[in-house]
Length: 228
Image 1 (spheres, helix red, strand yellow):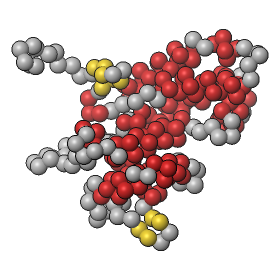
Image 2 (cartoon, helix red, strand yellow):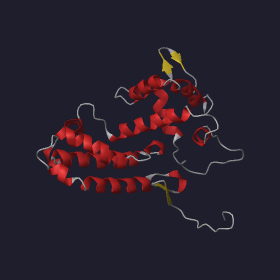
Image 3 (cartoon, helix red, strand yellow):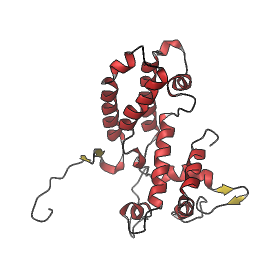
Image 4 (cartoon, one colour):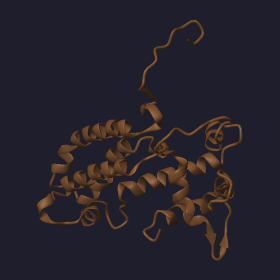
């Protein structure tokens, strides 16, 4: 009940264009995103089939139209290995369609991506990581009373117990693992990523880094480079 109005209880619902599922999983959301991105790609079939348009131009249109639909709200996705695999498969198939390179041509996905998106083209999972790191910096620069910042620093409540079996993957765990590349500056270890550190200590350390936007931009690009 909300006031005097009865509200139906459902397992899934759409909120601001994103599909909210039980337990915070994004498998249903990724299915919905890929379906919408597939439709956006199909609506531009006249562009992909055109012979008077350069391949790099088609690549820029693909990133602007299809990638933006596919990765909508991906900043907050707690993705699993199988989720990333589905996104990569979708992306690789569309890039091959654009370049007219089929699977039996024995051309690697990296080569296809370079032909369509250029030498600086990133895999879809790296693009998503960049989005998540930018969102993390944006949240950490918020004031303490803002709901996103309060949610990210929220700890385990008093009396809460973990369910038996494997635990549901949260957004914190992959982000903490991804930013572990910033845990050392030369030979100095920064607090937050050691097992003995407090669960939110890494966020407090990153909070100081994110206040300088230029510095944080350099950090997130270095984290998503192949050396990490």
